[in-house]
Amino acid sequence: MRLYRASLPPPHLTVENPALWHHKAMKGKKALPINPQAWVTLREMPGTRVAFWVVESCPYCTKQHFHLAGARDDDPEERLGEAKAPCRPEHTYILALPPRAQTKGGKRAQQRRERRENRRLTRGGALEDE
Image (cartoon, rainbow, N blue to C red):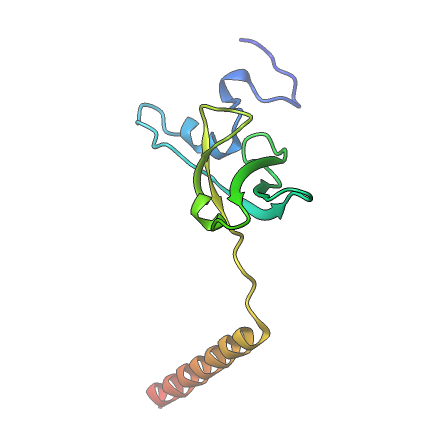
Protein backbone atom coordinates (compact mmCIF):
# COMPACT_ATOMS: atom_id res chain seq x y z
CA MET A 1 0.00 0.00 0.00
CA ARG A 2 1.29 3.45 -0.90
CA LEU A 3 1.49 6.22 1.64
CA TYR A 4 0.41 9.68 0.56
CA ARG A 5 1.27 13.00 2.06
CA ALA A 6 -1.46 14.13 4.43
CA SER A 7 -1.92 17.47 2.64
CA LEU A 8 -2.82 15.90 -0.73
CA PRO A 9 -5.64 13.47 -1.43
CA PRO A 10 -4.73 10.19 -3.13
CA PRO A 11 -4.64 10.53 -6.95
CA HIS A 12 -7.67 8.30 -7.48
CA LEU A 13 -9.75 10.75 -5.41
CA THR A 14 -8.48 13.87 -7.13
CA VAL A 15 -10.82 15.57 -9.59
CA GLU A 16 -9.75 18.74 -11.38
CA ASN A 17 -13.22 20.28 -11.31
CA PRO A 18 -14.84 20.63 -7.87
CA ALA A 19 -18.26 20.67 -9.57
CA LEU A 20 -17.67 17.03 -10.57
CA TRP A 21 -16.59 15.71 -7.15
CA HIS A 22 -19.90 14.01 -6.55
CA HIS A 23 -19.39 11.92 -9.71
CA LYS A 24 -16.60 9.96 -7.97
CA ALA A 25 -19.14 8.80 -5.40
CA MET A 26 -21.35 7.37 -8.16
CA LYS A 27 -19.29 4.24 -8.85
CA GLY A 28 -20.67 2.17 -11.71
CA LYS A 29 -23.46 4.63 -12.44
CA LYS A 30 -23.55 6.81 -15.53
CA ALA A 31 -22.84 10.40 -14.55
CA LEU A 32 -25.04 13.14 -15.91
CA PRO A 33 -23.29 16.04 -17.65
CA ILE A 34 -23.02 19.13 -15.51
CA ASN A 35 -22.99 22.67 -16.80
CA PRO A 36 -22.25 24.93 -13.84
CA GLN A 37 -23.50 28.48 -13.86
CA ALA A 38 -21.07 31.35 -14.20
CA TRP A 39 -22.27 34.76 -13.05
CA VAL A 40 -21.53 37.48 -15.58
CA THR A 41 -21.47 41.26 -15.80
CA LEU A 42 -21.76 43.31 -18.96
CA ARG A 43 -18.78 45.48 -19.81
CA GLU A 44 -18.38 47.79 -22.81
CA MET A 45 -14.89 48.22 -24.14
CA PRO A 46 -13.94 51.90 -24.22
CA GLY A 47 -13.41 53.34 -27.68
CA THR A 48 -15.24 50.47 -29.38
CA ARG A 49 -18.82 49.53 -30.15
CA VAL A 50 -18.41 46.06 -28.68
CA ALA A 51 -19.64 44.71 -25.35
CA PHE A 52 -18.46 41.61 -23.50
CA TRP A 53 -19.92 39.37 -20.84
CA VAL A 54 -17.25 39.06 -18.14
CA VAL A 55 -17.02 35.90 -16.03
CA GLU A 56 -15.18 37.09 -12.91
CA SER A 57 -14.47 33.60 -11.59
CA CYS A 58 -14.56 30.63 -13.94
CA PRO A 59 -16.02 27.49 -12.29
CA TYR A 60 -13.19 25.41 -13.79
CA CYS A 61 -10.05 27.55 -13.31
CA THR A 62 -11.27 30.50 -11.15
CA LYS A 63 -9.79 32.99 -13.63
CA GLN A 64 -11.52 35.82 -15.48
CA HIS A 65 -12.93 35.18 -18.98
CA PHE A 66 -14.60 37.33 -21.63
CA HIS A 67 -17.42 36.31 -23.96
CA LEU A 68 -18.65 38.47 -26.82
CA ALA A 69 -22.03 40.08 -26.10
CA GLY A 70 -22.37 41.86 -29.45
CA ALA A 71 -22.39 45.43 -30.65
CA ARG A 72 -23.96 48.29 -28.71
CA ASP A 73 -27.14 48.11 -30.77
CA ASP A 74 -27.61 44.36 -30.22
CA ASP A 75 -29.44 42.82 -27.27
CA PRO A 76 -26.66 41.33 -25.11
CA GLU A 77 -29.06 39.03 -23.24
CA GLU A 78 -29.45 36.97 -26.42
CA ARG A 79 -25.86 35.78 -25.90
CA LEU A 80 -26.52 34.45 -22.39
CA GLY A 81 -26.75 30.70 -22.01
CA GLU A 82 -24.38 27.84 -22.63
CA ALA A 83 -20.83 28.77 -23.66
CA LYS A 84 -17.53 26.92 -23.95
CA ALA A 85 -14.96 27.63 -21.27
CA PRO A 86 -11.89 29.25 -22.85
CA CYS A 87 -9.61 27.47 -20.38
CA ARG A 88 -11.08 24.03 -21.19
CA PRO A 89 -12.79 23.90 -24.60
CA GLU A 90 -14.24 20.45 -23.86
CA HIS A 91 -16.20 21.91 -20.89
CA THR A 92 -19.12 24.30 -21.02
CA TYR A 93 -20.84 26.51 -18.49
CA ILE A 94 -23.98 28.60 -18.47
CA LEU A 95 -23.59 32.37 -18.66
CA ALA A 96 -26.20 33.76 -16.26
CA LEU A 97 -26.96 37.06 -14.61
CA PRO A 98 -26.42 37.05 -10.84
CA PRO A 99 -29.59 36.94 -8.73
CA ARG A 100 -30.89 40.32 -7.72
CA ALA A 101 -31.04 41.24 -4.07
CA GLN A 102 -34.48 41.88 -2.67
CA THR A 103 -35.46 45.51 -2.40
CA LYS A 104 -36.19 46.96 1.00
CA GLY A 105 -39.93 46.92 0.30
CA GLY A 106 -39.76 43.27 -0.79
CA LYS A 107 -37.98 42.28 2.42
CA ARG A 108 -40.53 44.14 4.54
CA ALA A 109 -43.42 42.51 2.74
CA GLN A 110 -41.89 39.08 3.21
CA GLN A 111 -41.27 39.72 6.91
CA ARG A 112 -44.87 40.94 7.29
CA ARG A 113 -46.17 37.75 5.66
CA GLU A 114 -43.99 35.61 7.95
CA ARG A 115 -45.24 37.45 11.06
CA ARG A 116 -48.87 37.00 10.00
CA GLU A 117 -48.27 33.32 9.31
CA ASN A 118 -46.61 32.84 12.71
CA ARG A 119 -49.50 34.65 14.45
CA ARG A 120 -52.04 32.55 12.60
CA LEU A 121 -50.21 29.35 13.54
CA THR A 122 -49.86 30.31 17.21
CA ARG A 123 -53.54 31.32 17.47
CA GLY A 124 -54.63 28.18 15.65
CA GLY A 125 -52.40 26.04 17.87
CA ALA A 126 -53.75 27.68 21.04
CA LEU A 127 -57.35 27.00 19.97
CA GLU A 128 -56.59 23.35 19.29
CA ASP A 129 -54.96 22.86 22.71
CA GLU A 130 -58.00 24.15 24.65
